[in-house]
Amino acid sequence: MYLELFKLDEFPFRLSPDPQFVYWSKQHSRAKAYMESTIWLTDGFVVITGEIGSGKTTLIQSFLAELEDDVVFAQVSQTQISPVQFLQAVLVEFGFEPFKKRKAELLDMLNMYLIEQFAEGRKVVLIIDEAQNLSTKVLEEIRLLSGVETHKEKVLRIILAGQPELNRTLDSPELMQLAQRVRLRFHLGPLTSRETRAYIQHRLDIAGAAGREIFSDETYPLITRFCGGIPRLINTLCDTAMLCAYADESENVTVDFIESAIEELQWVEFSERTSRFAHYRTDPNVTGSLVVGKLLVAQNGEATNEVPVTCGRLIIGRTSDNDLRLNSKFVSRHHAQIVTDMQHSILEDLNSTNGVFVRHQRVKKHRLRDGDVIQIGKHEMRYVDERGAYVQRVAADK
Image (cartoon, rainbow, N blue to C red; front, side):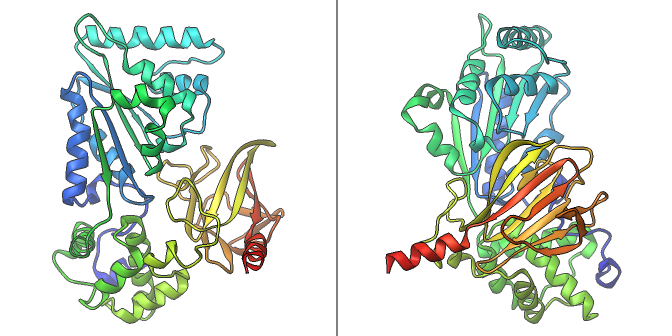
């Protein structure tokens, strides 16, 4: 690829979370400090929110990498689950095999474990990523867990990380008691234009640039306009632009290559993503995202969830940093992507091990049509295109 051309040791703009590449903006530093406060506060309960791609998962990985030996933790990322499945997931993280047990038994196992850890001088932290997907019933279980205590202090620290609607959920009347347990809340906003430039150079330096400015000065305002200070979008655009420069054998990324990358990604300016199609249905889980369809996800023939397809890029893979996580050994870390605008949704294989299939045919790149069935490992996703319904609604409004 382009490493030799740019004299780099590794790829600077990978999408997978890597604590080594964390850029500590003022906001990210503050969010991490709030996470760390859960360790030394006996009633630590922190909520961190941010838009998709703002760096929440990377922050969590950095936080976990620095925990002392006297801290044990459970990390839950699969959050579209029932209360029993949630308790099982937590216990699995702590090393138990809690299946085929009733809810009362699960709670007893967990309570006893927490008390035992406290007695042995250990601190226990529960981290839940993608917490905006938790049901009210699961959030109520979290409230009850947060109240487990000895005669001296509470024994479980909790960090909830999720998209902005998590705050709206916590502020609902039925969750008032849970909201009162939260000690600190922090929203991770976008990078400023100055931070965007520093972020890009930081990642290049970590990858081996050693201070060399690979991106020309004129590129940064354009990157800011199209990425809106969202780290994941910055990574996607910069990586694509470097590929464009590589194809042209240029050691410098200029505005022309940024524009080529934007055209290839079929992006509009960041500010237009929430206003260009104001009549269109938006995804309630992603503020301002324009929904053009959905994926009906099933595993082994059983429906599991429904995922909105929005304008932009949707990454599918095994790990928790993906937009759609398929937790299976047959799925690669970053298996496939769907790049969407108001005209098309393009499915692309990201050099996966086991491939991507549409209508039982293996594909590298495929323009999705309404009703297409995507198969990845044992998961099937039926694509439903809703653009036609949008056109009818706009016509009716007129």
